[in-house]
Amino acid sequence: MIVPMKKASIILATAAQEKDLEKIRDLGVIHIEKKTVSSESLAKVVDQKNKAETALGVLRTYKTAKNAARFAIEKDVTARVLDLVERRKNLQEQRAFLLKETSRIEKWGDFSPSALKELADRGVILIPYELTNKAYAALKDEPFIVLAKDKTGVRGVAVGREIVGESPFALPQCSLAELNDKAARVVQELGAIEIDLQRLAENKSAIESDLKIFDKTIEFETASAGLEKASLSADFSLSLLTGWAPAETVDALKVAAAENGWALVTDDPAEEDKPPTLVRNNAFVRLIAPLFNFLGTVPGYREYDISFSYLLFFCLFFAMIFGDAAYGTLIFVITFCIGLNYKKKTGRTPDAVKLFGLLSLCTIVWGALNGAWFAMPYEKLPSALQTLVLPQFNSDIPLSPFPGVLQKLFKIPADQPSNTAYWNVQFLCFTTALIQLVWAHIKNIKKLLPSLVAVAQAGWLLMMIGLYFLVLSMLLQVELPGFAVYFIGIGLGTYFIFAEQRGGNPISNVGKSFANFLPTFLNAVSSFADIISYIRLFAVGLAGASIAQSFNSMAVGGGVGGSVLSVVLKIFAAALILAFGHGLNMVMNALSVIVHGVRLNLLEYAGNHLGMEWSGYAYKPFSK
Image (cartoon, rainbow, N blue to C red; front, side):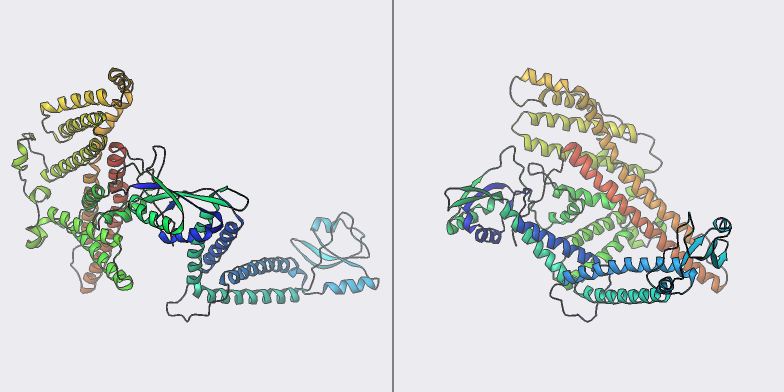
């Protein structure tokens, strides 16, 4: 359920606001309204956090051994890391320059640039040049000593004066040997830096701890800077803190206010307010919370908490998409092992692990009822597993009639479908759609009562029932009952009459409703499509089963005859094919759950029929 919120305003003395904010943080119940603020102290902490994140990002590139000896934590490991990174950057730039310079002069051999300067001081002027063959041929009588010549050009020195129109070769600062020595020293220093960073990587947890402290400090400084202030005199001013607190915590706030001399005002949220959302459920319903966290979906404060219904239908969708009891067993074993490991380390089992355990059990039950165990044929299953199969859901069992209790309501065509099991699963998909979407409109009716608009939702619910029978008639050849057409007409008409009855002239309100005829009609068509959309559960499950059967056929297609070596190789190849094929199928099923199972809950159910926009933001109290 969504916990009711109260808007809390606390007035405190500005002179004591730091101390009072600490006490408010100790209470840990107020979600402070976010504001864009700035202060010198806040900027300083943000800068420290950014530096720590940069340092941690560097250290995370270094692997640390589990049993490696721990080095002493430096006084400021972040500053040390950033200093090493800056030095490494400078050295890398220096190495790049040295390599470029070495490449530029190595064709000249090892010589000392200072020797040319000494000769120039003595009156012997030698100016180095790198000339193209064409430029060299054009020198004519210019005094030029050739040192080397190849296809790329001519290297040499001009004697006495520069060559007109040509740029002299830029002399290096030192000889080739000295450049190589400098490059070697740079490489050595870079190696030492890598050793230091590897050593500091053993203390990543220290920076991670600092980041948690920085986050809380930033939160505190933001709260402090966001307080509204009013001066009552030259020496005295007040600060105002506003936020949201669960209604159940108001008494504790009142006690704290009385003890600390704060002025406290609490009020219900106004229509224009957007309080944070705090969802609280029992241990079972809370299992779906990890999925909501993964999707990043938070219901608005005035929207629905659909955790319970979402969990129930998601379990069914997951089981129908995976569809195989053996897959469910594998998931359960993996989940069980992960759960034991977490339990051993932390003393508790995460809700995400419990959720996968529940999903795997649902998959096992669904797969067992269908006789699906790695897509093996029914006749090859052990007798114990065959007894678990529900005949209506297994296509390998002789055709079984539609359950008699339902034949009175659903008039099945005289010519039985070629595959009763497929027909039954499709029927289940459409029936699941009806149940879930009707559930949505019942929730809408309950929320809107006693407003007349609730009658409009009842009309839409009636129309959904009629559309359900229309879908069965069109896709499963079930005879369309006469009442279905009346349900569609009466339901749509009821919606038009009551959709805008929010007060005022009833006749005028009906006119407003009919003014939206086209959007309403398109929504009705969309509802028809929403019911059909649930066929994806059958289609995706069938596709997964077909893929599994194909890999099974590939694995055993060659038989097991031949020499001993041939048999061993065939068995090994079959094992690889089965492991790869079923592993790939499970991965594809997992993606299908996200694409289809999540979609049916979020779009068709919550979006189209509950009208949810997931516009909320999570309640995060100001706390330690």
